[in-house]
Length: 330
Ligand code: UDP
Ligand code: MG
Image: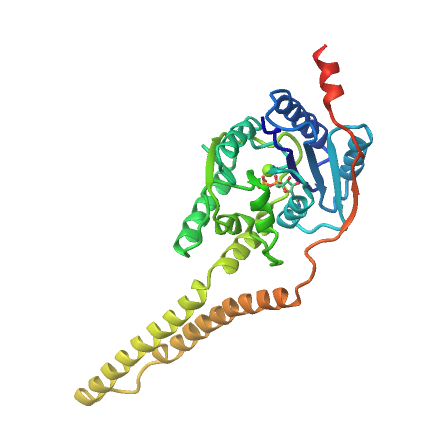
């Protein structure tokens, strides 16, 4: 019989000290269960990426490694944001199969077993998709819905109601790390990999503890990144708008000329002169802004700076959690 795959669970953590002990406990239990059922190897590990936290997150991670829990600690040199922390973890993970999940355990761990089953049946990528979003605020729900609709309109393939809870095979992870861009929007990049893909439905819960690390400002930045990294449609829209305004103006000009020839009129009013100036000025500024967004992105990508630096990796040389499992079975 083929030996069961080595599973790496990747968890980006930013100021998650409140929730982390429970997260580690639950993930460890999951590994024990799956290893007990011979579905994963006992070399499987939880990769906790500390994204430059300012609280006790790293000492909790280092302590867990020290205590011989099945944890590998990856400490980034500073805060780089969720998407980069996640790719750092994916690149550090050494499993045959990798599952990424948030530290707050909003995602249902039971879905990991279902994902593994689909992997065994041949899927390279298994997306965790939320059945309902009741745990999210009304604002988060409706803004997310508008965002997915916009992304679809812009022609980007994204899996609706899928955040970054997913399984990837080794070859999918390797393919992903060939994308060298600095502005990451993983949810848009992963469907571009191709490979056989599947979805698993699950219920999303409230955060176990702590507060969201995605305030409105970060959500907007992620949305802008998502749009400008995957679509040049906004640039085309500017040209379209320019064309529309010019055509309308031409037609209006002809109409005005004919009108003036037929009924000679007094000097035209202020509004018809000044308002179009402001209107067009506004459109031009928006247009320049959108172009600037792309130029800025080019600038950042052209510099090709490293995405992150790892300050240290903590892992025990040879610790399998089998003895622990046995002692718990007693
Ligand atoms: N996170 C991170 N770096 C950041 C912000 C967030 O690694 O700069 C992690 C965070 O610790 C969590 C995940 O990204 O594991 C998702 O964040 P959160 O749960 O706050 O987002 P929400 O679920 O509210 O969208
Ligand atoms: Mg969360």
